[in-house]
Amino acid sequence: MILLFYLLSAIMIICALAVVFSKNPINNVIYLIVCFLAMAGHYILLNAQFLAVVHIIVYTGAIMVLFLFVIMLLNLNKAIILRKSTVTRVSAVITGGVFFLVLLAATRQTFEIHARYPFASDFGLVSGIGKVLFSEFLLPFEISSILFISAMVGALMFGKKDV
Amino acid sequence: MDLTTLIFKTVFLIIILMVTLIVAMYSTYGERKVAAFMQDRRGPNRAGLFGLLQPLADGVKMFMKEEIIPLTANRKLFIIGPSIAMTTALLTGVVIPWGGTLTIGGHEFSLQIADLNIGILYVFAMVSIGVYGIMIGGWASNNKYALLGAIRAASQMISYELAMGMSIIALVLTTGSLSLHDIVAQQHGMHWNIFYQPLGFLIFLTCAFAETNRAPFDLPECETELIGGYHTEYSSMKLGFYLFAEYINMFISSAVVATLYFGGYNMPFIDGLGLSQNTVTLLGTGFFFIKIFSMIFLFMWIRWTLPRFRYDQLMNMGWKGLIPLGIFNILATGIYYFFTELK
Image (cartoon, rainbow over all chains, first blue to last red; front, side):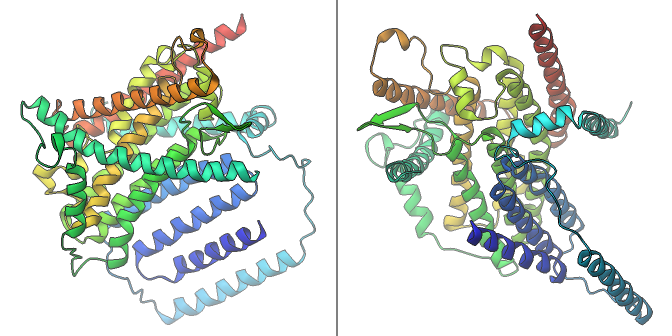
């Protein structure tokens, strides 16, 4: 288990770094996909099968396909070399450095997180998630589902030429 | 998991892999024979008796052909593309319950490799990863026809995944479980889901055709417009992988349809015969394969009967036809169960 954890973490970190440093947009997207798959592996290690599979379906299977799709349509085959002025570069470095400092300070002062729920091995399974979603978090769940259905109907309306 | 179970699972995994490959291999032969029958021809009849060795000859041909990787192609991705297509096609068979339980020497073995409690969603996830095989291969070829084919495949699969999800939600409402093992067990004794979800079945079947890129939805490889679509630049066994993955997908989606809607390995009237449990299991597995082969025949029948859709018709049908129907189906199922549970 520990070995798997480190393996998945290593894959994730390497791929995440490759997303940032790789110059070719298609490679960026593919590294991000591998990164997401490794993240799904982490969910499975936590016994959250449902979350892992939904993560693969939604992020890896739908959103990243759209990313790849757009990049292919725009035909960004060549690596793009961004040319920025010196002022932009210096200000970017300063902003990034300050943000990093803030993050560092914030993580140094974090206290130990206590689990809000007692650990149960079936918590990540469908029934566990369902019970929590439909009792404690019913209102946010219903509101977000209305949001989703309206977005979908909106997409359908865009598709229709003569409404 | 003890050692005997582990050994059994490993052996069973290898058997399922072999069966999948052999069925896919003979599906190519079956496809040509069915096509010949429908067009009043003879079909392959030179290699072996009734042409039964034809798939082997085709395989040898695929391996022996010269392999060409275009100079302008992205080499790595060009090789990764067909590998993804093949891998994801083979991975799906893991969650399908191929039979009941066998008792060998006092041990009970389930004829299912992994009984995930999210079985259906796992199948769904593999299907959604499968599209990368086509997209990456099509893009890496660096050919505009291949790229167009890849883009068509991606948009088609995303559009039909939605409607497929809708039909599965309605099915889950009736079964109350995501595990394929439970879904099959519930359909025991002719309580097949097709009688409870006829509309859902039609939506699912249509989407299964679209997801496997079979005619009348084979626009990604539409040869009159796109030469060969996403595999235009492929040759030798890499092309073979793409073609073979399509047949494996057809086999697996037939198995999924049989599992979800036709009772899986359940046989009608089997309880009255008083057979031993092992016999029932083996007969059930045989019956399951008969269901699968009938579904595969349906796939072929439709391919050689219906003409191909136009691209805008395909999108209209997905977004304006199947998705509203799917939402209606969920609503109707929900209302029905709301009122029957109240009583």
